[in-house]
Length: 238
Image (spheres, rainbow, N blue to C red):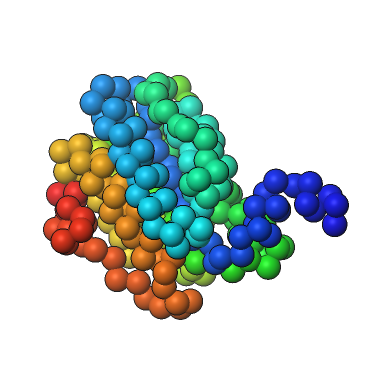
């Protein structure tokens, strides 16, 4: 028991037994994001953090893991937003999407196991992937290695292990096709970001996770249509 309470993660879970709403943010911070895109990404992420913490239920339920690529880096392990360190994203490197998504899937599996070990209930995890380019290897060469994940993603969707959203930031037709392939098992498609509306996107994400955190187990949550928005959230998808 002493060893259990010596673990900060275990202490956090046992101190707050709210049903968790886990989400992995998988953010492309490659060199092509340099300039306005990375600045808007940082501003949008700050707005997301503030918005989640204004909702009392979401603040105790939503746990975020942040992974950037490339290179692939865990910016923050799963934690409540109030426990997360300040993050600043910088644009550099290539777009190793396959390695990043593979890591996100692993993080989801590990977090669910931790919840189960400590008797914490949870909603189906989300992986929210944003990229502005086609997948590459770690050296910048175009790569179709992501296709190795298509079957595992199909199985994950069938077994309701998590939900995957993909967002394209000015992606090419080929890049959009990749994101469509990744989203298809989950009944989705590539969501094309409208004119750098990062803040609108992040506020929609915050509102959506907040809705999930306040839902009943098994309830189908109706998300705001991101193409048109509503009285609270502006549309952000083309």
